[in-house]
Every structure is written in C-alpha cells, then in structure tokens.
Image (cartoon, rainbow, N blue to C red; front, side, top):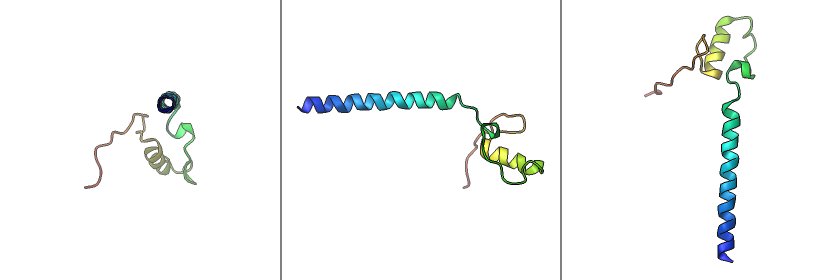
Length: 75
C-alpha cells in the first residue's frame, strides 16, 4: 500500500512539472511590453514623457525596444 502512495506522489510531481514547463514555454513566447497590453496611466498618449516612463516601468525596455539590464538595487 505504501508503494502505491509513493507512486501516486511521484506521478503527480511529474505531471505538475510537465504542466509547469508547458506554461513557461507558452509565456516565454508571449509578447512583452506596452504592446502586450500593459495598462498606461491616464494621459500617457498625450504626453511622451509619461509614455516613456510607463514603457520603462512596465516593459523595462529603452526607446528602441531593447531590455534595460538590472544593475542592482538601493543600498
């Protein structure tokens, strides 16, 4: 009986792992950034400075679309 329980736990762990890998695969191919539907604050379309800040905050990309690297935090 104990072997059946261990088998069930093992198969469940494998199934969860497969579902996780599939989810990561799907999410990694999804578009990112403001074009992906991140909300913009009111007035972002009328003020380019606000749109720039929103793009940096939500998508972490520069004006050419390249990712902005993380260089550490506050010390």
